[in-house]
Image (tube, rainbow, N blue to C red; front, side, top):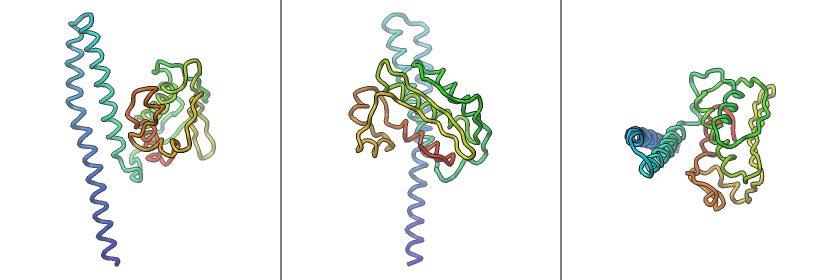
Length: 210
């Protein structure tokens, strides 16, 4: 029995490693041609005018969406239990402020000047941006999303509030599934259904959760 269980676990580990390797390789293979397409569209747009320029700008925006998808797949291919390895000191308050300032829609912020955590700044920024993007996309016009950052002796909490939005119980159970988008979400905005699962994955890599 011990030998049989060891063989099963070995095959399972190998299958999971192949799956993660496939996602990583696929994301890398996607990223290179997307970068080339974007550069060519930008060069063409520089010498274009009118409707042609608008179409090329639309192509560039679509390429950016696909690039973000490739980046998300790369992050999701990381093992949550593997940890971070080399971590740096990050001011999470600065990360949140920068993410709020870079978006088009106003987000109300309540945060101290400094909230220090140990982690990977690029990954944390990606998680925060995805949470804020969700709030901006789905909060009804006229209502302001909010971000509230606080810290205690052993815990840092970032709460993102999307006013005017309520989820049914069955949707709450599915909202962190990769590529899942509920009926209301599909009607309200475009997306891939990866934002929340990506944010949770990054949090868990850092020993936290969403």
